[in-house]
Length: 268
Image (cartoon, rainbow, N blue to C red; front, side, top):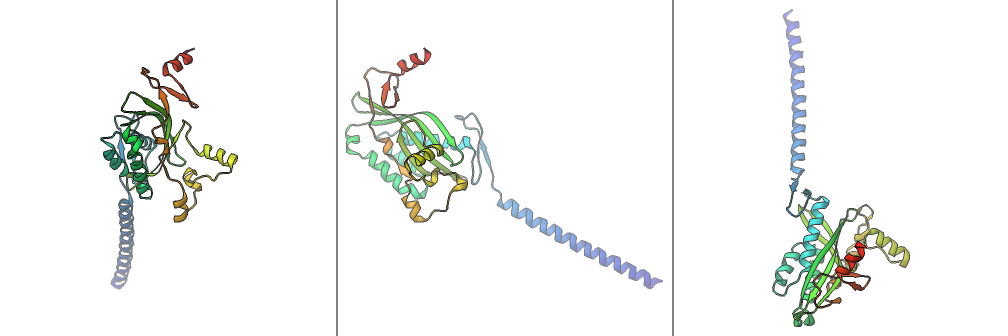
């Protein structure tokens, strides 16, 4: 009788031991999974900057549109306002956010513009006044449109409408400008613009203007041939502003119209 009780107790102890072993394995696997999950997660920072009316969220490899739009406006404002005394400071500040792929060329083109003999001799100052900002989520591009005003050392001023186009990516919680284009006019070169141009003129659509889900993996040669930087739109030329005109003029299809006249027509 005692032998049977001993065997029964032994079987119960064996079952208990197996249960404890199984539970330890499950707990260990859960701990490893939790540790891997925590170590792979990155903090997300939520900001409400004073110049934005919505929250700006920044994660490890992404950000919401408010943050990207705000950053695009910041870069466009810095690049668009070149002062003789602060040009080097602006160049260094903006270059820090340029992707390594365009860093060297960006500094070269901006220095060429700053060191232009005509620009330096005239003592010109370039001022950019943004009018609108547009974000295209399919391509992570920001378009900032505004008026570029060039004031010479004399009393003469020139203006033109310019659009700054930037591709912005987030890597390791930091924004980078992957391409920067400037061109005259107020029409952003969105995906639709490139599609219409391609169907009309047979021009190939740039990779950066293609939605991310349709992009192909480019070779180094293809990337080198793709135009990722163009500052020609910033050249200090434009429509002369008549002396005595206090308000900034509006340029529509190459015809300058005083702001007051435009406002009166809109009211009528």
